[in-house]
Amino acid sequence: MFAIGLSQKKKGIHSFDIPKPEISTGDEVLIRILQTGIGGTDRSLLKHHLVDPPETDDFLILGHETFGVVEDLGDQVRGLKKGDVIVPMVRRGCGICPSCRHNKSDYCYTGLFKEHGIHKLHGFLTSYTVVPAKYVVKVPRGLRDVAIWAESLSIVEKAIAQMRLVQMRVPNLCDHPQHEWHDKNWGGCKRALVIGAGPIGFLATALLRLEQMEVYVLEIVPEDSLKVQLVKEMGAHFVDGNTFPPEKIVEAIGHVDIIFEASGVSDLALQFIPLMARNSVYVMTGIPRAEIKPTEVDANLLLRHIVRQNQVIIGSVNGNREHFERALIHMIRIEKTFHSILERAITHHFPLKDFEKGFYLKDPNQIKVVFQVHSK
Ligand SMILES: [Zn+2]
Ligand SMILES: [Zn+2]
Image (tube, rainbow, N blue to C red; front, side, top):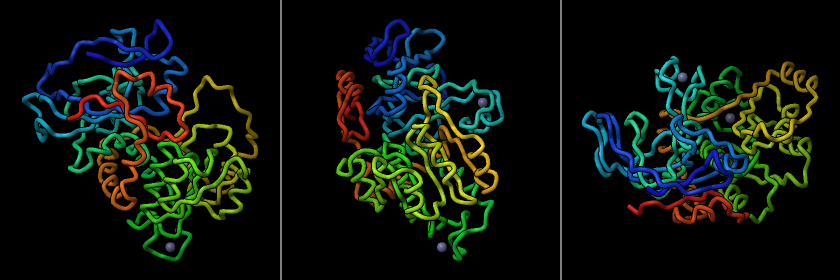
């Protein structure tokens, strides 16, 4: 079976010939992969040659954003049938800690979890995969064309859910009881600054706009690029990071209730901490690589602001079943409200054999790049 990944022996992206997997226990599902997408994480693993393979191999098959069709299933699997479209989750819990034992492996305590296509488990840039049924989520009808977004959106769902939980600590700034952080209309009269309009920033903008927030998106790409056009189409304001320094940006926007960091550019991300509003929250989802040179910060200034202004900075990674399920529900609303914007943001399709074209694509208008594996 043709597969794409990284080798410990040789840098670069390579193809491998691996055996087709089979169901070995009654609780497993054999998935015929339809599409697998790639994003910043995959390109970063390739760029920095970060190969963390399963114990038995010296290579790692990449790809953690995927969906496919149930080809076969074990006799103990309930609630799924052949032909169902499903998304496998990325992380497998450690099986030891309380979080993992309660289906919240995104909050694993031991760090002994594994992740498909990233950390000690092969990924989905291939034709078939076998996973335990408890790690798959069923895709609602009509979402097949955009199911590739489920994994990325689950990350945004988790980040926003955490941020709301944290903000339930403070009284609301506006006078509308329906806009309290715990209310279902919580986004009303609130402002967000999203840093970065790549896939995660784009999805964060979509969710925050669905919640009626006033959203500002900071980017350094030209205003006529597709990334910026799409966030503007959802009613967000574009902030040109090349023209305006952080303090001018925040001064012009006014009170910012939340900052959502989705750039992974640490210098830029840190500059916004001393600019946070009182009682506000800053959620970070970008992961700067340790290989990038350390950055200098004025620690006194940062701590002074964080303490004196009741600020909270949250790091958020991964998502569990709850976040995948919520993502799939929100995807229906996003597509309806913003005229199939998720479908339009899948900018490039390649057959798997053209993996090098996909990984080394230089198109500035790329948002989501997917590899088509099976057509049905
Ligand atoms: Zn755990
Ligand atoms: Zn209000």
